[in-house]
Length: 466
Image: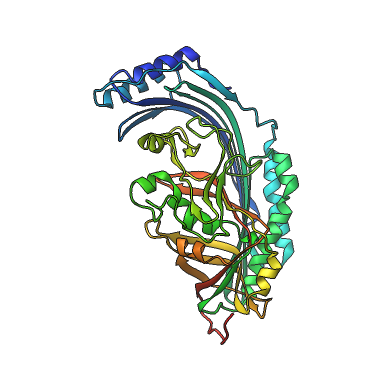
């Protein structure tokens, strides 16, 4: 580890933090090395390489949380933070300190990649997107990676050291023709090594997907509007399950009464064919980790099993409130943020249907192969999403691409409506924002048939029902 620390420091800091009362205390030490390379208009516009380190100290007492952080990671700096949080805690009985025991030492980051190689990645993507079609007029490419080393110590005796690596590559291809301008976006996110990740998904492949989508959208007719069957392809990724379902299963929103799933434990909340899992242990996925940001070992969590609500996503604070243990979903953006319940890799488990057979079941509807941005109300589950890549389905066959479509509905109601679940599984990656902080996540789903959704569009819909 680059951070300098000693076990005796951590024990004394925890004791100092709880000196005036508290149920629990923890320390989060972090050093982060990051690289960012952006390219626009054929030029590398920005190269940023930086190092940041700091520490956060937290005390929980009843419903109250006191958190302080600093970039002073010295012994005296840690003691100063502990004194600050201790003074802020109401007087009460302090918890007994457990003897610190080392849980893990992660050694995931094995490569030392020169900056020139990272710059070359964005240049390769730019060339591939421009060469794909003359309709592509502009390309924006961004590469970023983070190498993070953390130490986490808790008053319950946990001592975890971990090393984490992530990289992300995004391509925006902008196409134009006859006054119509459209954008195609594609992203790669991984916790695998640089070479492994980019050998698996070369930048040229990513760029060509983005360019193909943008060029096709320019020439696509407007989408029809109306209520119709919608097939969400596995390759569309799990935006739907993340936004319309996942956030509502985070324990802090449930406990605040801001989730449609509050007081629904053990009830049927989805179709029997639907099982929803959040698994931070999936190898190489962008949202994966061995230990969460509170030192709790990651494990798969079955949230909905065959339609029945089984579990919420907990951090230590929300778990302590219910007298139970965290299930490893306390996450934070950095040492400057306190941990909160967050998703990692959230997905609907594959079913038994062949994806092509699902499409053949639809007489007239919409096939969504890529989701765009959207909004969701976690309190009632209502959502609206843009369709980044969609096609008409006619008589069980995939028809022309359409542009400008949106889908509107209610998350729990959609899950109850699911009629068919494919045996495929497609992932998307992103940075999930909540309470002013972002964390890397992956989302996935198999091909799904939703018999009835409201599709927004500008074209008139021809007659017919599925």
